[in-house]
Figure (tube, rainbow, N blue to C red):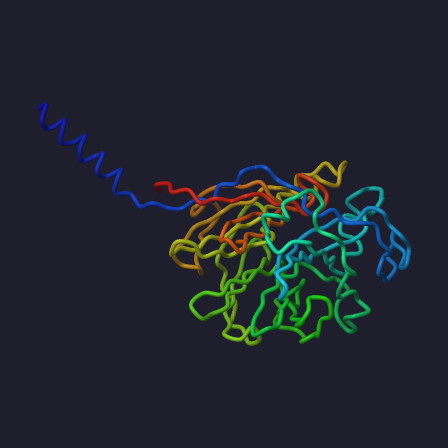
Length: 327
């Protein structure tokens, strides 16, 4: 009887040790606010609470992209608009999001940019006057470098493409695709010779594939939520597996402080198949603190996660490491 018990214990231990290992991202929770927007004149056109050409001291950022230029300097480009003093606050929470802020570092080493308010403003880009015929909204740019040029995919639906040689002047290439129930917050991954774009729609994250960033496959729903509204998805390939980072908006906000509208809950899902991250939490591996996160590596291969409006106004950056855990 004693030997049977010992054997059962050994089998249990072996079973536990044989369960697969998964790498889980863990943040340091030591955010540094690397960029705080300076005051500027509103690019227009007029809205209910904002006037074209008028100076506003306080600006709010949202979805953004980090990219390195040919001289080694880091840039941040993303949604911006003046903070609106509306009553109620929620009436003007996203008012005037018609152009992108553009900020540049003074260092070619990313770790040296991790200082308070390190990035400096450059002139804003792709205002409505630079995009005649397009919808007013200019949201969630994602930028990659390819063949010596910078390619920007931005939204909201229709998702659009612009190309630049210097990150300041952009050549519009038109619409890529649109969907009847919306497409927003695009994120790109290049893997095995194929470009993957993930983006949000109603209660879901979808994916399309391309070989040239111009022609895209039909959409696949890769994640479905029955609770929160997905925002700002990022698709990452790490250690022979795929990870989907998704920011959450659950609608719970008292409307008293603007920061409450920028919820900082980001769920992380793992899958060997980039077209299937399941429903709700069935593939969830962890939860991180970030609003509209970008997940990226620096020139030394170190990983980072960014966040806007939380914990500070502007763009903040935190260290990210991968830890092995058993499923």
